[in-house]
Length: 545
Ligand code: VG1
Ligand code: CO
Image 1: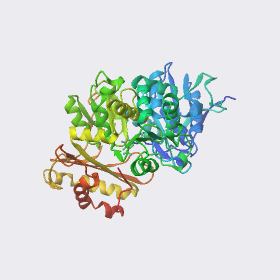
Image 2 (image 1 turned 135 degrees about the vertical axis):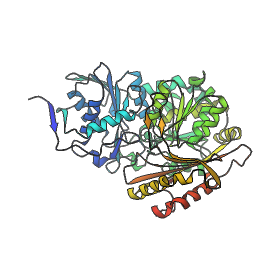
Image 3 (image 1 turned 45 degrees about the horizontal axis):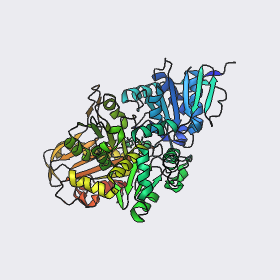
Image 4 (image 1 turned 90 degrees about the vertical axis):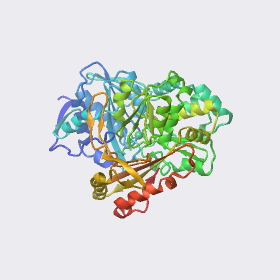
């Protein structure tokens, strides 16, 4: 009897629609019989892999990671995929996966992660597909995968044991070669080509204490290799450095609410000069200084303004891009250094074409994501090293760097209010209420300023002219303030409403206000307009950034 089987199911799973960043569902949903298999079969049927290249598979180590990798290998063998590359124990960060796809000339990558969502049997699981450029698959690809998954009632499967992949090596099964590699080596090599790690190490050893929180997720092994093995810093500079299946019950989302251990060390106890954290799959970063939190939109602006200090960018940068809800702090920098600045919808996939066409070098999102053309994903540890390189060259504190920046460019006060896991009908009602009010708002006064534009953001990709509609409601005021409202595409429980507030202050104004104070008029005016607290029955958002 053949060990390649054709497995049939009664009817397709109707809910396999990829969101902002792949298919993300609760672990329990993913554990339904054939659920993962049908989605992987849809990916393989959509991918064009009739070539000699490899497929990269890895994940952030959360509950279900290894089991999923085994199943994917079994489906790939049945599909005669020639070569598969996996990291030891299946642990690979999203940026490291993006790098490997590019370096190994792979035809695609499958990344198992629900990113910053909690893991474990009661947490979430996810599947992301990256294409040959190393970046998240564009909408036209994921739409095809979705369509395919809506019809599929069968998949191919190699029904026999897969050898362990707990050490470097090779195994061959039928037409497929599986190579097991060290998941950290290539990534660290890339970082050594961009940054001067010796210079950073000298600076840190002298008088600049740092702490990095891996949140029991994927970045632990990468951070330990860089900070402890390469730079020779003390072992305790990496917190929560062992990847755990349930992330030790932490919510691996590096913000002030969920990375509160780190926030306490830097903001209250002020025990270190610099602190940083990454999310579950290693693509996000949070930067803190002694008593000082760096807003991610400001972080993008600071990196862009200081590229000359980083060896990898010493020849200059071609342009910059930010997602629409990201503050316009980087726009001021782009204007001053005379490079183009693009505005894309939320989600890293929209940066891909701009990066591939060399129209931009650096890009970022307000959601703790920054990256560059070195790969096609946002990159948490890269951002941390970028900050450290700037500080090592400018020999100043985090707080001095940000204040100098504001004094030079002005400050974009910014905050994001998340109402997480609220009832779907409540979120849709608030969203629709605002959408219906947009025509009335335009050319009228709102929060004491004239509304220049109020619309639902549509993006036309400047490279392939593809159009993406419904990318967020926005109110743009004459005084350069903006309010944006979106529904999350990564949450798995109920709906998550995100509201973004921004107000620009020039260099001669007070730049030291608490953002919640600076933005209170916008916040209050929106609540008056939409009754958010009443409808959500919440006095406060779940997370304030
Ligand atoms: C969120 C962020 C978005 C980010 C996405 C994936 O999406 O807002 O900026 O690209 O997560 O990040 P949403 O639709 O929930 O707002 V990650 O770290 O999951 O790859
Ligand atoms: Co992530």
